[in-house]
Image: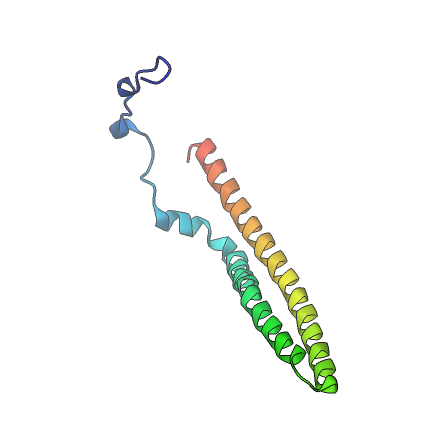
Length: 122
């Protein structure tokens, strides 16, 4: 008993529920118009997820340049590493923006569609 409530007394009568059975196929059909947004969101997520390992490789390359005895080689190498870091940062910014925007649009559309169907009685 939880705070004076007998949990065993509450029973759900599943046999008398009204409406069609939930179906994943039906949900996918309803979400068909958002597939481009879902795919762009997935591509953005892949690019955003590859950012951390790419930064690790760039930092490793920077360490190699730091241990070089040749000052000219070090300077040119670190300029290259700085450019790679800036480029990777710009790509990561675009990837995160694409990921979050596209998945938000797709999720909001399907949520709105499901709620309107649920409350309209279809």
